Amino acid sequence: MQTKIIATLTQTRDRTPLASIRNLPGDDADLTPGQLRALARALNEIADDSEAMPMNVKHFTPRQREYALAV
Image 1 (spheres, rainbow, N blue to C red):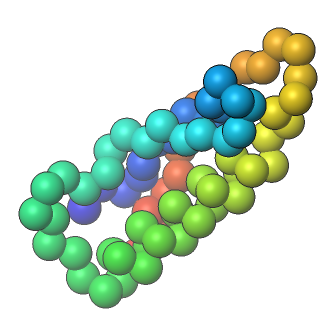
Image 2: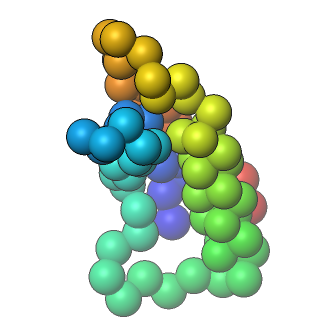
């Protein structure tokens, strides 16, 4: 499994949080319980960061960030 995933934190047309994620394990990925937990932790962190971004600003700037998959 990759050691990091990359997320671009952005917003929808309705100004609600949206995350575009790259480097997810592909189709039919075989993951150990530890790898699943690491992926879940990273996805929860992405969700938290996405919700924390200011959405109702005049000039919104998407932010790209790497999230570690520590097993």
